[in-house]
Image 1 (cartoon, rainbow, N blue to C red):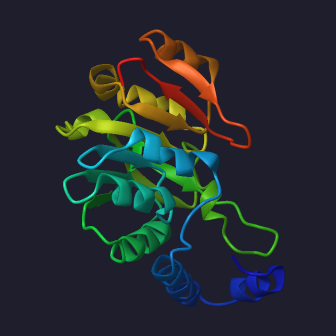
Image 2 (cartoon, rainbow, N blue to C red; image 1 turned 90 degrees about the vertical axis):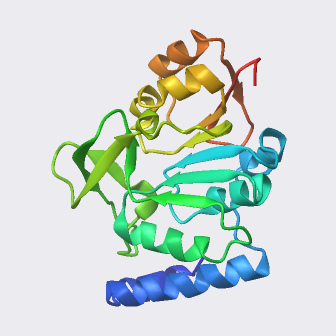
Length: 225
């Protein structure tokens, strides 16, 4: 996004200034059509979502996938995005306000398996800037406290066809909190942190694993989807 020198300089600015610079930068990207990620599955989403579908974006960050989902599901679809870190959520909300379709529901919550309060640890880059992409839930305090919520607690009634989970190691717990939805609707699942427990859980109800060259994510698809 910026050069190392620019990032080092930005790290010395007040955080509200940093936020303002980011808002302006992402707004320009959205208007120019350059607000995207180079992850292979970002393009593949067009195979998994159709107009009218619903999608859930866990760990939405600034909204690259949220925007992609929003564009694909259209005016009759719905995107539900979880982002617990307040500073990142502010940018997500500012970006979503620029989307072509007002079909996103933004939740300043961490998806988990129950409602509670947990800490979040936020590492820093070598430049000194906070690495919000690496923000992770922790039971050992953390720099901020956030509320968690299970996806099943939302009782989503729409046709959820895609569930993307990027929760920095909390992914298996997110799955447990969405198990009723997964068992009922069999959405395609794009997940970053894969463990043996995840594979066992999903294969037990018929999901098949798919890896994509050049991607850090794993895809799980169900024959019924």
